Image (cartoon, rainbow, N blue to C red):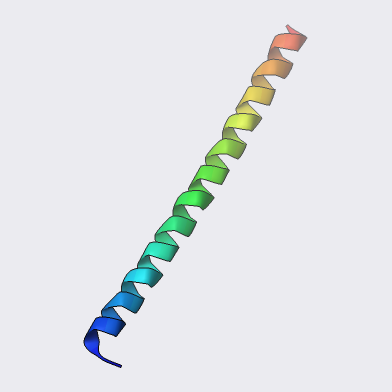
Length: 47
């Protein structure tokens, strides 16, 4: 395996993990926003 192929593999691996991290963060953020929205709705309904 030459150096260029190795570099490319590392780049792909880094990009993949970055994408996974980003989507994971996005999912957690969406979940959090949904939870706060639900909490706000239930608090408003209670008031």
